[in-house]
Image (cartoon, rainbow, N blue to C red; front, side, top):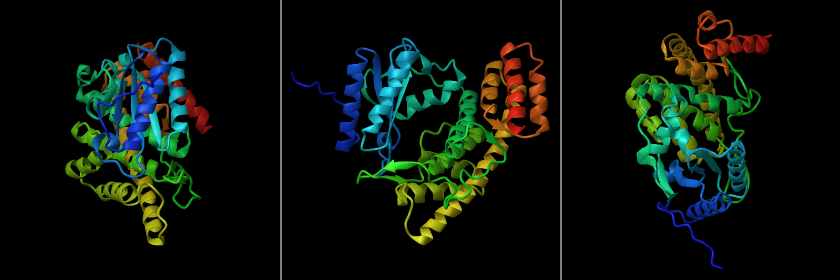
Length: 344
Protein backbone atom coordinates (compact mmCIF):
# COMPACT_ATOMS: atom_id res chain seq x y z
CA UNK A 1 0.00 0.00 0.00
CA UNK A 2 1.43 3.38 -0.99
CA UNK A 3 1.95 5.99 1.70
CA UNK A 4 -0.33 9.07 1.61
CA UNK A 5 1.61 12.25 0.82
CA UNK A 6 0.48 15.45 2.48
CA UNK A 7 1.07 18.27 0.01
CA UNK A 8 1.70 21.58 1.75
CA UNK A 9 -0.23 24.64 0.61
CA UNK A 10 2.80 26.72 1.64
CA UNK A 11 6.47 25.82 1.33
CA UNK A 12 9.11 27.23 3.65
CA UNK A 13 11.66 26.77 0.83
CA UNK A 14 13.64 24.57 3.23
CA UNK A 15 13.17 20.94 2.13
CA UNK A 16 14.10 19.51 5.53
CA UNK A 17 11.61 21.78 7.30
CA UNK A 18 8.86 20.98 4.81
CA UNK A 19 9.52 17.29 5.36
CA UNK A 20 9.19 17.68 9.13
CA UNK A 21 5.89 19.53 8.68
CA UNK A 22 4.56 16.84 6.35
CA UNK A 23 5.56 14.19 8.85
CA UNK A 24 3.82 15.93 11.74
CA UNK A 25 0.67 16.38 9.65
CA UNK A 26 0.76 12.71 8.71
CA UNK A 27 1.04 11.61 12.33
CA UNK A 28 -1.82 13.83 13.51
CA UNK A 29 -4.03 12.84 10.58
CA UNK A 30 -3.61 9.17 11.40
CA UNK A 31 -4.10 9.52 15.14
CA UNK A 32 -6.99 12.01 14.95
CA UNK A 33 -8.74 10.79 11.80
CA UNK A 34 -11.24 13.40 10.58
CA UNK A 35 -10.82 15.63 13.64
CA UNK A 36 -8.34 18.25 12.41
CA UNK A 37 -9.65 21.38 10.69
CA UNK A 38 -6.26 22.60 9.55
CA UNK A 39 -2.55 23.12 10.16
CA UNK A 40 -0.96 26.58 10.24
CA UNK A 41 2.67 27.66 10.47
CA UNK A 42 3.63 30.62 12.65
CA UNK A 43 6.93 32.41 13.15
CA UNK A 44 10.03 33.00 11.07
CA UNK A 45 9.58 29.98 8.81
CA UNK A 46 6.17 31.37 7.98
CA UNK A 47 7.27 34.94 7.28
CA UNK A 48 10.45 34.08 5.37
CA UNK A 49 12.76 35.39 8.08
CA UNK A 50 14.15 32.10 9.39
CA UNK A 51 17.76 31.72 10.51
CA UNK A 52 19.84 28.61 11.20
CA UNK A 53 18.47 28.00 14.69
CA UNK A 54 14.92 29.22 14.21
CA UNK A 55 12.24 27.02 15.70
CA UNK A 56 9.05 25.68 14.16
CA UNK A 57 5.73 26.90 15.57
CA UNK A 58 2.73 24.94 14.36
CA UNK A 59 -0.96 25.41 15.15
CA UNK A 60 -3.06 22.24 14.90
CA UNK A 61 -6.70 23.32 14.97
CA UNK A 62 -9.35 20.74 15.84
CA UNK A 63 -12.88 20.95 14.47
CA UNK A 64 -15.32 22.61 16.85
CA UNK A 65 -14.31 21.83 20.41
CA UNK A 66 -12.18 19.05 21.80
CA UNK A 67 -14.44 16.08 22.44
CA UNK A 68 -13.21 15.93 26.03
CA UNK A 69 -10.16 16.84 28.14
CA UNK A 70 -8.56 13.53 27.21
CA UNK A 71 -8.52 14.42 23.51
CA UNK A 72 -6.81 17.73 24.27
CA UNK A 73 -4.31 15.99 26.53
CA UNK A 74 -3.61 13.35 23.88
CA UNK A 75 -3.00 16.03 21.24
CA UNK A 76 -0.59 17.87 23.52
CA UNK A 77 1.25 14.65 24.33
CA UNK A 78 1.53 13.71 20.66
CA UNK A 79 2.94 17.14 19.88
CA UNK A 80 5.56 16.75 22.58
CA UNK A 81 6.53 13.34 21.21
CA UNK A 82 6.94 14.82 17.72
CA UNK A 83 9.13 17.56 19.20
CA UNK A 84 11.39 14.98 20.85
CA UNK A 85 12.32 13.39 17.53
CA UNK A 86 12.52 16.61 15.51
CA UNK A 87 15.94 17.81 14.36
CA UNK A 88 14.84 21.42 14.95
CA UNK A 89 13.15 23.00 17.94
CA UNK A 90 9.47 22.25 17.36
CA UNK A 91 6.47 23.63 19.23
CA UNK A 92 3.07 22.21 18.30
CA UNK A 93 0.07 24.12 19.62
CA UNK A 94 -3.10 22.02 19.51
CA UNK A 95 -6.20 24.16 19.76
CA UNK A 96 -9.94 24.01 19.27
CA UNK A 97 -11.66 25.94 16.52
CA UNK A 98 -14.24 27.24 19.00
CA UNK A 99 -11.52 28.65 21.27
CA UNK A 100 -10.57 31.14 18.57
CA UNK A 101 -13.83 32.96 19.25
CA UNK A 102 -13.10 36.58 19.99
CA UNK A 103 -16.00 36.67 22.43
CA UNK A 104 -13.32 35.56 24.87
CA UNK A 105 -11.04 38.51 25.61
CA UNK A 106 -8.33 36.18 26.85
CA UNK A 107 -8.05 34.66 23.35
CA UNK A 108 -7.75 37.98 21.50
CA UNK A 109 -4.01 37.79 20.87
CA UNK A 110 -4.08 34.11 19.96
CA UNK A 111 -6.84 34.72 17.44
CA UNK A 112 -5.02 37.72 15.96
CA UNK A 113 -1.78 35.78 15.67
CA UNK A 114 -3.64 32.93 14.03
CA UNK A 115 -5.47 35.21 11.58
CA UNK A 116 -2.66 37.56 10.57
CA UNK A 117 0.64 35.85 11.37
CA UNK A 118 0.35 32.27 10.12
CA UNK A 119 0.66 30.40 6.86
CA UNK A 120 -1.97 27.81 5.98
CA UNK A 121 -0.39 24.40 5.38
CA UNK A 122 -3.01 21.68 5.07
CA UNK A 123 -6.71 20.98 5.65
CA UNK A 124 -9.23 23.80 5.58
CA UNK A 125 -8.20 27.45 5.84
CA UNK A 126 -10.55 29.19 8.29
CA UNK A 127 -8.52 32.35 8.94
CA UNK A 128 -10.96 34.57 7.04
CA UNK A 129 -13.71 33.44 9.39
CA UNK A 130 -11.94 35.00 12.37
CA UNK A 131 -13.07 38.54 13.16
CA UNK A 132 -10.68 41.18 14.44
CA UNK A 133 -10.93 41.84 18.18
CA UNK A 134 -11.43 45.21 19.75
CA UNK A 135 -8.33 47.28 20.35
CA UNK A 136 -8.98 47.08 24.10
CA UNK A 137 -9.02 43.29 24.06
CA UNK A 138 -5.76 43.21 22.09
CA UNK A 139 -4.07 45.66 24.45
CA UNK A 140 -5.16 43.68 27.49
CA UNK A 141 -3.89 40.41 26.00
CA UNK A 142 -0.59 41.98 24.94
CA UNK A 143 0.01 43.52 28.37
CA UNK A 144 -0.48 40.17 30.08
CA UNK A 145 1.57 38.21 27.51
CA UNK A 146 5.12 38.93 28.83
CA UNK A 147 4.22 37.17 32.06
CA UNK A 148 4.94 33.77 30.51
CA UNK A 149 8.49 34.65 29.46
CA UNK A 150 9.26 36.27 32.81
CA UNK A 151 8.02 33.19 34.67
CA UNK A 152 9.66 30.60 32.41
CA UNK A 153 13.11 32.21 32.53
CA UNK A 154 12.91 32.03 36.33
CA UNK A 155 11.29 28.59 36.51
CA UNK A 156 8.85 30.31 38.86
CA UNK A 157 5.14 30.08 39.53
CA UNK A 158 4.89 33.63 40.89
CA UNK A 159 6.83 36.83 40.21
CA UNK A 160 7.65 39.25 43.03
CA UNK A 161 8.28 42.87 42.10
CA UNK A 162 10.95 44.11 41.71
CA UNK A 163 12.40 41.13 39.90
CA UNK A 164 15.89 39.76 40.42
CA UNK A 165 17.90 37.85 37.83
CA UNK A 166 16.72 34.34 36.93
CA UNK A 167 20.09 33.05 38.20
CA UNK A 168 22.29 35.69 39.80
CA UNK A 169 25.29 33.31 39.91
CA UNK A 170 25.35 32.47 36.20
CA UNK A 171 27.54 34.33 33.71
CA UNK A 172 24.47 35.47 31.79
CA UNK A 173 22.21 35.55 34.85
CA UNK A 174 20.13 32.55 33.79
CA UNK A 175 18.88 33.96 30.51
CA UNK A 176 20.93 31.29 28.71
CA UNK A 177 19.41 28.23 30.38
CA UNK A 178 17.19 27.19 27.46
CA UNK A 179 19.01 24.88 25.05
CA UNK A 180 18.36 24.47 21.34
CA UNK A 181 19.19 21.55 19.02
CA UNK A 182 21.99 22.38 16.60
CA UNK A 183 22.87 20.90 13.22
CA UNK A 184 25.38 18.51 14.80
CA UNK A 185 22.66 17.03 17.01
CA UNK A 186 23.95 18.62 20.22
CA UNK A 187 21.70 20.78 22.39
CA UNK A 188 23.47 24.01 23.29
CA UNK A 189 22.64 26.92 25.62
CA UNK A 190 20.89 29.75 23.83
CA UNK A 191 19.61 33.28 24.22
CA UNK A 192 16.16 32.40 22.88
CA UNK A 193 14.30 33.30 26.05
CA UNK A 194 16.25 36.54 26.33
CA UNK A 195 15.11 37.51 22.83
CA UNK A 196 11.55 36.36 23.55
CA UNK A 197 11.39 38.28 26.82
CA UNK A 198 12.58 41.55 25.30
CA UNK A 199 10.32 41.12 22.26
CA UNK A 200 7.22 40.50 24.39
CA UNK A 201 7.99 43.48 26.60
CA UNK A 202 8.35 45.68 23.52
CA UNK A 203 5.15 44.30 21.99
CA UNK A 204 3.20 45.02 25.16
CA UNK A 205 4.45 48.58 25.52
CA UNK A 206 3.74 49.39 21.86
CA UNK A 207 0.24 47.97 22.28
CA UNK A 208 -0.30 50.06 25.40
CA UNK A 209 0.81 53.25 23.67
CA UNK A 210 -0.71 52.78 20.22
CA UNK A 211 -3.13 49.83 20.31
CA UNK A 212 -1.29 48.44 17.28
CA UNK A 213 -1.09 44.71 16.64
CA UNK A 214 2.42 43.24 16.35
CA UNK A 215 2.95 39.80 14.89
CA UNK A 216 6.71 39.18 14.96
CA UNK A 217 9.90 39.93 16.86
CA UNK A 218 11.23 42.05 14.02
CA UNK A 219 8.03 44.07 13.92
CA UNK A 220 8.27 44.63 17.67
CA UNK A 221 11.75 46.12 17.23
CA UNK A 222 10.68 48.36 14.37
CA UNK A 223 7.44 49.59 15.90
CA UNK A 224 9.00 50.28 19.29
CA UNK A 225 11.62 52.49 17.67
CA UNK A 226 9.00 54.21 15.54
CA UNK A 227 6.31 54.82 18.16
CA UNK A 228 8.19 55.03 21.48
CA UNK A 229 11.95 55.35 20.83
CA UNK A 230 12.91 55.88 24.47
CA UNK A 231 16.01 54.78 26.39
CA UNK A 232 15.05 51.11 25.95
CA UNK A 233 14.91 51.18 22.14
CA UNK A 234 18.67 50.50 21.69
CA UNK A 235 18.49 47.45 23.96
CA UNK A 236 15.52 46.02 22.06
CA UNK A 237 17.33 46.46 18.75
CA UNK A 238 20.65 45.11 20.04
CA UNK A 239 19.12 41.97 21.54
CA UNK A 240 17.36 41.17 18.29
CA UNK A 241 20.22 42.01 15.94
CA UNK A 242 23.02 40.42 17.95
CA UNK A 243 21.43 37.50 19.77
CA UNK A 244 19.21 36.42 16.91
CA UNK A 245 20.79 37.62 13.68
CA UNK A 246 24.51 37.72 14.48
CA UNK A 247 24.87 34.90 17.01
CA UNK A 248 21.98 32.77 15.71
CA UNK A 249 20.57 32.42 19.25
CA UNK A 250 23.78 30.69 20.42
CA UNK A 251 26.03 31.93 23.21
CA UNK A 252 29.05 33.64 21.58
CA UNK A 253 32.57 32.39 22.22
CA UNK A 254 34.57 35.61 21.88
CA UNK A 255 35.25 37.43 25.16
CA UNK A 256 34.09 40.81 23.86
CA UNK A 257 30.84 39.33 22.58
CA UNK A 258 30.23 37.51 25.85
CA UNK A 259 30.69 40.74 27.78
CA UNK A 260 28.27 42.44 25.42
CA UNK A 261 25.71 39.69 26.00
CA UNK A 262 26.19 39.92 29.75
CA UNK A 263 25.55 43.67 29.61
CA UNK A 264 22.37 43.12 27.60
CA UNK A 265 21.18 40.62 30.21
CA UNK A 266 21.76 43.21 32.93
CA UNK A 267 19.75 45.79 31.00
CA UNK A 268 16.99 43.26 30.37
CA UNK A 269 16.37 42.96 34.10
CA UNK A 270 16.03 46.75 34.32
CA UNK A 271 13.72 46.77 31.29
CA UNK A 272 11.62 43.99 32.84
CA UNK A 273 11.14 45.97 36.03
CA UNK A 274 10.33 49.09 34.05
CA UNK A 275 7.64 47.13 32.23
CA UNK A 276 6.23 45.75 35.48
CA UNK A 277 5.94 49.32 36.78
CA UNK A 278 3.89 50.18 33.69
CA UNK A 279 1.97 46.94 34.09
CA UNK A 280 1.07 47.85 37.67
CA UNK A 281 -0.55 51.08 36.49
CA UNK A 282 -2.35 49.21 33.72
CA UNK A 283 -3.66 46.61 36.18
CA UNK A 284 -5.01 49.32 38.48
CA UNK A 285 -6.89 50.95 35.62
CA UNK A 286 -8.33 47.59 34.60
CA UNK A 287 -9.43 46.75 38.14
CA UNK A 288 -11.24 50.07 38.49
CA UNK A 289 -12.53 50.76 34.98
CA UNK A 290 -12.73 47.59 32.88
CA UNK A 291 -15.73 45.37 32.20
CA UNK A 292 -16.21 42.53 34.71
CA UNK A 293 -14.90 39.87 32.28
CA UNK A 294 -11.72 41.89 31.74
CA UNK A 295 -11.40 42.48 35.47
CA UNK A 296 -11.60 38.73 36.07
CA UNK A 297 -8.88 38.08 33.50
CA UNK A 298 -6.70 40.78 35.07
CA UNK A 299 -7.16 39.22 38.50
CA UNK A 300 -6.13 35.82 37.13
CA UNK A 301 -2.92 37.37 35.83
CA UNK A 302 -2.33 39.45 38.95
CA UNK A 303 -2.36 36.21 40.92
CA UNK A 304 1.02 35.46 39.30
CA UNK A 305 2.65 38.82 40.08
CA UNK A 306 3.01 40.20 43.60
CA UNK A 307 3.57 43.88 44.31
CA UNK A 308 4.44 43.65 48.03
CA UNK A 309 2.66 46.07 50.33
CA UNK A 310 1.47 48.23 47.45
CA UNK A 311 -1.36 50.28 48.99
CA UNK A 312 -3.13 50.98 45.70
CA UNK A 313 -3.16 47.31 44.70
CA UNK A 314 -4.39 46.39 48.20
CA UNK A 315 -7.18 48.98 48.04
CA UNK A 316 -8.28 47.82 44.60
CA UNK A 317 -8.52 44.23 45.85
CA UNK A 318 -10.44 45.32 48.96
CA UNK A 319 -12.89 47.15 46.74
CA UNK A 320 -13.47 44.10 44.54
CA UNK A 321 -13.96 41.92 47.60
CA UNK A 322 -17.17 43.90 48.12
CA UNK A 323 -18.36 43.42 44.55
CA UNK A 324 -21.75 41.87 43.83
CA UNK A 325 -20.00 39.80 41.14
CA UNK A 326 -19.28 36.47 42.83
CA UNK A 327 -16.29 35.60 40.63
CA UNK A 328 -14.67 39.00 41.16
CA UNK A 329 -15.13 38.78 44.89
CA UNK A 330 -13.73 35.25 45.02
CA UNK A 331 -10.65 36.03 42.91
CA UNK A 332 -9.84 39.17 44.90
CA UNK A 333 -9.97 37.19 48.15
CA UNK A 334 -7.80 34.42 46.68
CA UNK A 335 -5.10 36.87 45.60
CA UNK A 336 -4.97 38.48 49.03
CA UNK A 337 -4.71 35.10 50.75
CA UNK A 338 -2.07 33.75 48.36
CA UNK A 339 0.01 36.91 48.67
CA UNK A 340 -0.07 36.65 52.44
CA UNK A 341 0.93 32.98 52.26
CA UNK A 342 3.82 33.52 49.83
CA UNK A 343 5.26 36.57 51.56
CA UNK A 344 4.73 35.08 55.01
